[in-house]
Length: 313
Image (cartoon, rainbow, N blue to C red; front, side, top):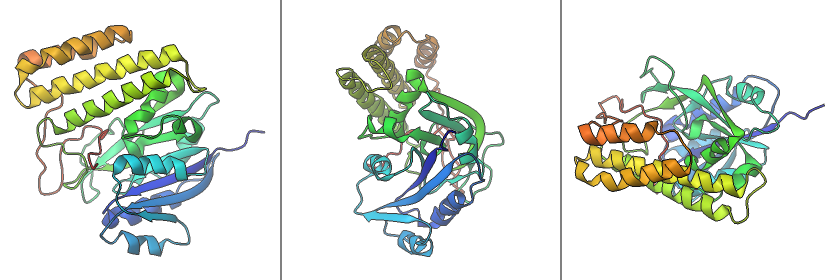
């Protein structure tokens, strides 16, 4: 008889005390299924708001780790170092899980699977629907990651590092919205200043590509050296694509050609389809960004592009 997977829910919080209770409750109110809820951990990354008070209200149900602020990357890294479950479900404190999150993800766990991603509901600061239809995920709160596999990728600077497990053939995407992703004026991702988010993503993808190439010298059990090198080329191509987008957003189309050449080289070496490169060329030629910026309004509504880049450092 197969032992149900043990899942740790780890909530990452920096001055999101006003949202934290809902995040904690969403972990406590998960539907039963073929899994064991190992623990709920809140990492309070140097909050100066009401976070500590909210944590005290849930002290009998939640393990709280408080420390001086270290930034998003170290906090996400610690989420996997502190967890004791077989799988980790990270949750940004301003988001909240759908009640079926753990049950549905547990049903998708197979022997070879190490990474599960799902879709999201996009809501505004008050929790009201911001986008009519469910939206593809990829950000922190839309993941369930096998802890032992994740440990081989630590330390991370962003959740994109864990996407390497999917690119290695050990992941799946559930087209089911299982989290409420909150877009508001205080998101850590800057979506309204031209080029900021894209440059950050480029830096993250470059860091991941360098890490994967380094790992190829001693591959972890879930992959091989050749796959790691291929993925390194893939993420170098992604980094170049983000730089192209940053230049287009900031009106510097003349600077696009070098990253376009790098993007083509990475695409060829990783044996990836050429469609992203062709779209990047079209964007550079026309001057139309692929991810148009949206100014935040008074309700916190903004660009609903998946949040792969928490920019607090």
